[in-house]
Amino acid sequence: MDNPVETNEREIMEYYGLNGFMGKTRMKMKFLRSWMLHTMAYSSPHSGLIASIQRSRGVKIGNNCHFSPYVLLDLVYPHLVNIGNNVTFGSNVMIFAHNNPAANLFLKNGEFPRKVEQVNIKSGAVLFPGSIITAGVTIGENSVISVGSVVTHDIPDYCVVVGNPGRVIKRINH
Image (cartoon, rainbow, N blue to C red; front, side, top):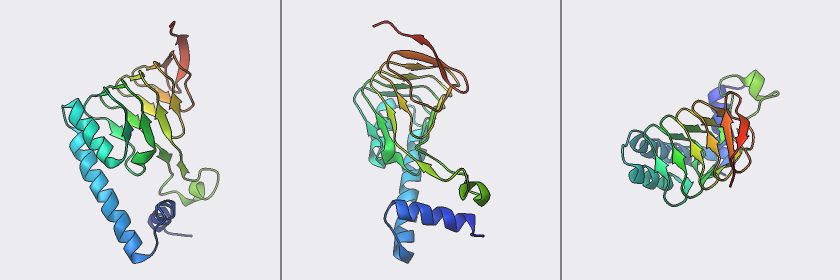
């Protein structure tokens, strides 16, 4: 069986179109830069600075968004996170554009391979503290994701979501 570290590196290099020693070096430098920028943004108390730093990582962020400290936006595929205008992020929100059973090759090579998909947060959405958004999910316009909710499927516009797994409990009149 393969080494999980080598398998993960190979998958990421293939995704980014890299190969060989220089490709591996470029990949590691890219992720070091992204991790350093994320680290600065993660604990910053200034929302505008957080947005600016996340944009430099490749996250697409609209206008007038508010970021609380400790927001984690995908560390490996930040360019797959799209955020509309006027979106609010509470502390400890996590958004993942991928999932990967990194150390378990049985699962990775079987029914749970690496999944890499865009995440879209439409304009006006509010993600309360501790909410988690997984790969491939779209959060609808002006929808509210309540505290600690885990969203694994698309949420329509103008909805309130609660729970784990997140489910729509209310439609917001507009």
